[in-house]
Image 1: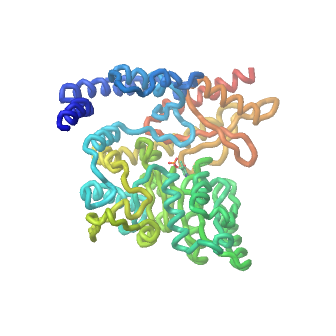
Image 2: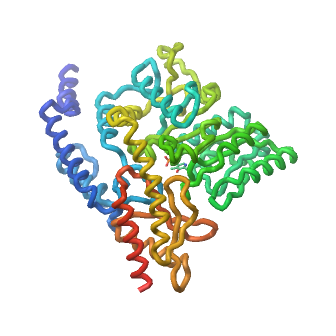
Image 3: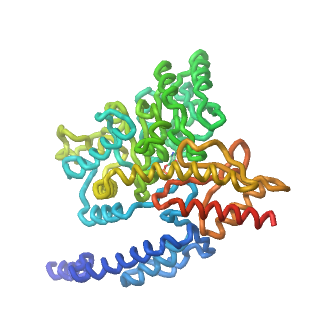
Length: 479
Ligand SMILES: *Cc1c(COP(=O)(O)O)cnc(C)c1O
């Protein structure tokens, strides 16, 4: 028996490379990362490749391994040179973020040391680090220090966490569901609808609140709708407001909505996935007034705190509400039970074992300090305002409202033919060229182009180049 085990051990030990092998692996990986970053200023923002990385299938997972160089070549050819390139400063579609470098080092250390961050008992320091970051975020958005929350995988999971909490806090179960009413605008992110579905409250009444000319929730219309629903015997339950919509970056009138929610006893949730971190800079803080008075809020450090994908956050004002929805006991967890001064993520979220997300956030914030983040956010807002001003100066382009944050909507008005069709072709041409990446949306039934400035690498030169590409492409098409 011992012999057999020893034979297995000899093979199993290959899972632990020795120091010299580790150093070889690391230098290969570091060289790969350096080459990627050295090329980022010139790399396309999109590489449309018809094979779509299919080459990976030529190298299936097999009994014996391959060399790191071969693995990195597969990664390069099939993943890192195909599709969208969100770390590029000329990536201006959807909601960019970028991924600051020290976050990658934080991830590396988190994976090497593999601390267990689900419960305080397992690693008090890791839990303290994340809770400290959550208290810092609470300060940024204007929440009280004793609000509770956790770092999630992203905004969608954070919205789901908050919506389940709001459901339980207001007893939205059984017969109550079809009488409960949810209020949001047509610009609410689709993860909200997904969350309502997963939370089992699809059957609740959905009210689409009208927006004003800047695509912000019409507070008077919200108030009137809630009053009507109350009079009709329904149960107004949840208002979902946006601190920056994905479509246009518009910020709903949060302070007014707070008053309406309070006067009718409705839960007030703020989706700040894209916009909440703009509270770090003066331009954003002014626009986001009232955000800190909501009952729950989400924000995405992987968007406007420029961290790599897989980092969201949720905060709930009254920590008891979060515990009520997520704190469940199990016998095999009995050693970990006890009353501690810090909340454990597992007690207030759907997750148990989880990535140590705090380290990828803590390291960049500690190394750089907050100042460069604050400056970058101001810069993004000002770049969006600059684009909004400059694109109007190019013959044929028309714009949407002055941006609340860093999203601009605009389009080209062709001298002849259908404008929707022209803009659809315009964007396809630019996306296929790939030098810059901008995306499109549909607003009031019209095909509109969007520019979202929120990658930390996007600077004045990138916006000037984007303006030039838009001008040249429109001219060529007018031909
Ligand atoms: C991006 C976004 C979400 C979804 O967040 P993910 O991190 O992509 O899951 C939700 N709401 C808004 C306003 C967003 O911009």
